[in-house]
Length: 144
Image 1 (cartoon, rainbow, N blue to C red):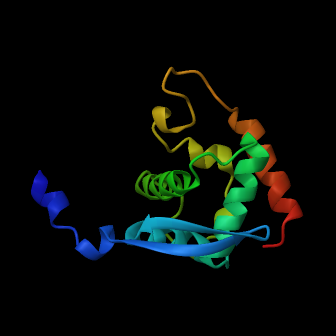
Image 2 (cartoon, one colour):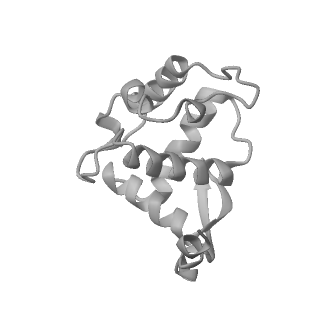
């Protein structure tokens, strides 16, 4: 089993810090290179740079939850969810298909139930329809 994981290129798990400006406030985000690569792919699907994607995710997270919490961890989980959705065919592998054109409820059905937004206690913390509406509202009011 270990060979599957230890065979990874060390460059992938080296970390890199990027400075980003979120609504005029400069902050630094430190992620492993592999996560930056996945975020760049997600951003590219919608014609954005990675900083634009991060700002958009931040805005939508605040709109849906009211706070960002541990934002670097949120970005890592977002990258993992993207890869899981690709693996479960919830998102087309063709990177020319923008994420913004996909139906969130249909996409999320491809995830295993425990990845769909329940807390550890099994209680729904945020309804996906409410979250999807908040994201759609943020999407419609923000330039792409």
